Amino acid sequence: MHIKNLHIFPIKLIKKITVLLSALALAALLFTAGCGSATGSGDGMEGALSASGIPTPPTEPEAELTRSPSPSPTPTPALGCLTPEEATDTILSFLDSGHYGVALVSDDLAIGSDDYYTFLISLRGSAIEPLVLVNKQSGELKCILADNTLAEITAHPLYRETDDVPIDWNGTYIIVDEDGALRSYILLCQTDDEHFEFTAYSYLESQVEELSGVARISGREASFTSDAGAELSFSWSGGNLVLEHSHQKGAGSLTGIYAYTENQDSKVVTVSPQEAVDRLSGMEAQAAGLTGDMQDYFFYVQDDITIMSDRLCYNVLVYSNEENRLFYREQLFVTLDGKTVYRQEKTSGDLHIFSLQ
Image (cartoon, rainbow, N blue to C red; front, side, top):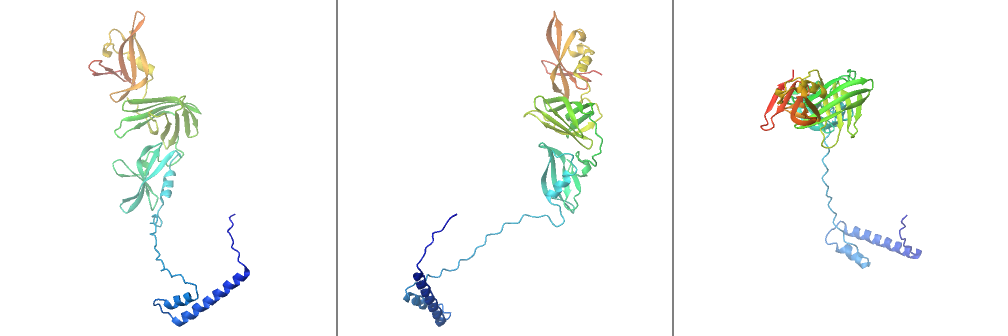
């Protein structure tokens, strides 16, 4: 505790000071009564006090008070309007999982006589379109589609009306871009009540990533961790499969919302590598740029998937056996559906296309 220095005066000195102060107060009162409210030069007052031997300090002019400008108040929603936080909760109420991010994009969108908040939903930094609108008055949800038209919230891929939508850990699920080209897809095959096998592909331009394994089921969700540490979580939003992929930097991401498809077209895996080789063995050797019989050749399917003419293909190396030695002869590309073969000329780069159907 800090203790101030106390100056202690003798009692006699205190009495003298008290008497002197009383006399000075009386003199000042008499002088004021004699001078009234005169302001003049103040010689009378100053002279009387000077005569007593105690000068009076000059009166300083009263300082003007300067008020700092008040900060502008934070705008608050009009009475009866939803706050941004309440609008966010409205969106979160129809999402199946807490993994999604909901960000306010705009708070001043007006359509007709209605005002809206505009939100973007994302998953691990990947935007999930379309944008979601929340009516500030009613809380009604809408969507803005890519062509800037207004649509019902049911158009959003994450929207669900009930948690009772049946799920099936079997089938093919895909993601296509705005041009209709396949971006990612995954094949599921449930093996028992707690597990399913999957094979997933993601490709962008010339990069193709593959991830396969056995995932463990836990209710409406499932999870998988690879030996390399890549993590894949599965969940459902209505009838759509939601994948969240934690992967190494630089690897193609499988994160996104996958829609079920029954169309087994050329962009979806329908044959295994061995089945692709079997189909190659049945074609004419001359069509593949080879001589003799295809049964005389050996085929090696590489692990990587190659894109040829915007199609995902198995990369097949062809070897001939001559005096118990293998010689490389040709490289063929078989689409993942096993229906088409590509052969590229080594010198000109011309692409030859053959059907395996």
